[in-house]
Length: 243
Image (cartoon, rainbow, N blue to C red; front, side, top):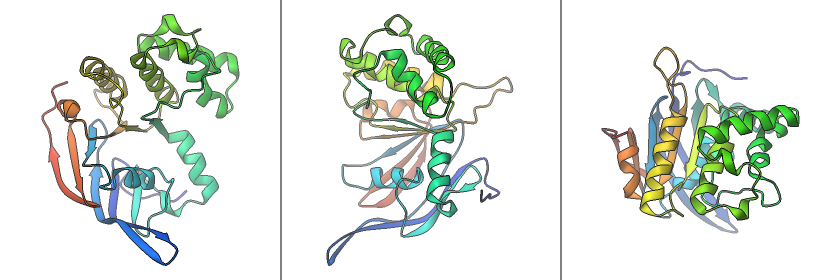
């Protein structure tokens, strides 16, 4: 697996991306460069259509950039084969989706255990770890419930548990508060930040967290903000996090 010296950061360098439709071409990213550091909650913000989702997809190795490089904590993801890139994602990345993407035919605990089972863990062990994670997100009493028996706020907690149960090195959150009112949105962000960036015994967190959002109510939870506009980085701010 290709390694680079930047094992303590995510290095985004000169990323450009166009989409082609027949004889037409639409460039959506223009020479994007930024660093994302461990132990910080990085907000990726900007209006709809500014390129946030495309950039996140390239960082995660789902899309290929036209030019530039992405280094994820020492691994040059664009140099991996498709098979190795998929494996790298499974082992290192957790996702919290705007629409949650929970499986309605499974129980809450089974939904959380699913990523572990996909990785090859035995069901009994996976369900034990899932139950532990449900305790962490304070929804342990709903482990046997089905998804349609949960409130929207509870479903978001399940989605957080599912993303964190594999102990991902990078956690990507797509509009995690979009479906929540202000009170539930704040609770979810507090929970997300406290769990995702929990410090180890040495007082450090090695996890990277990127939150894609245009909800300014959650800006107080960020440590760093990458502001995008029209496919470009408009500004990068270091924030004074309130949590």
